[in-house]
Image 1 (cartoon, helix red, strand yellow):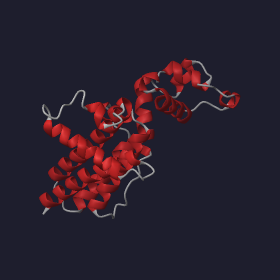
Image 2: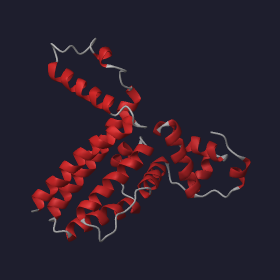
Image 3: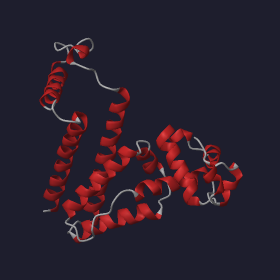
Image 4: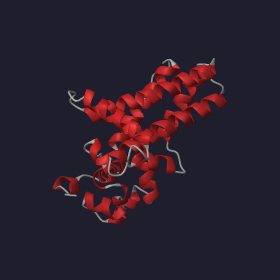
Length: 226
């Protein structure tokens, strides 16, 4: 990371430290985030960070709060379905921008004020809509699990890439041995061909898949609520 002369003249603060740590995670992955690397990015000695950040765990908790702060909050008066849909959209969008964040957020034992605010707001909307505390709990868990899981799958697909055509898959997936998988592969590629005129085929298809699952979840919550 290149350190500008200006960065060394600015006073050190917790905000600057966390923003450099966030940039490191986005650029080089979460494993690159250390007190030493953050200090190097700021052009200071690592020991000077401890006046603003207790340790690496505090650093990680801090960048989690920055990520969660990017997620918009629905209006407290929003209909519960609209609120959950908006939450799903904004969480997916934010986590796609920070692919390392999903696992980190859920692994933290401490919960900062930003996460508390978000969760309390969503639970409040559900409770006011008539959800029992038990149903609100299960709904929040189900929605979070779906969105986080979908984002992790999306990132995995980006990293491993995809075969260019069905012919490449025939070497490992033979229709006589795996007929149903092969049938689904044919369907997936035929859908890709139908959308070949779009500007961003993979994103459009991924959103349609996300929307399908999200609709099933929300409709299921509605049935239980009734």
